Length: 154
Image (cartoon, rainbow, N blue to C red):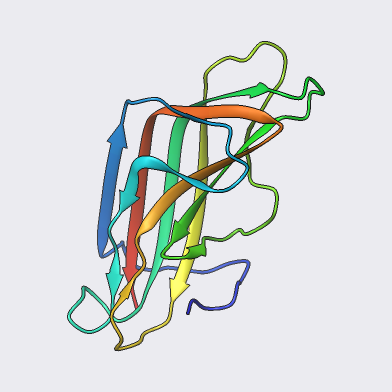
């Protein structure tokens, strides 16, 4: 279980580990359910025999993105977030607008940051970071993406 949401935190040390992964391949979707961007994941584990028993993770995802309106109502959007294991990172909302469909669709660069804290526990846990997308009244996608996760052990 992660710690209940807080709207701020303070870290006074450098990250224990920084992970990075990128890909140039284009991935497009029209799914209205969360789907993972292929390859956009970083394996993370907690608990006995792992790098730490608990940790705060801060994920940054940057990509060129495109969104095309499919309902012709100017309201189409591509949503994006980072899941850690089965939990979404904070800030958590029902409105993760990564890019919206406006005018003539054009690839443009967008970035998001998500965080989560898992309290110390001896039980081994898989909290792999995965970038996921979904659409609303649109088709959309990403390319030339970079995912960075900073790990602050507790």
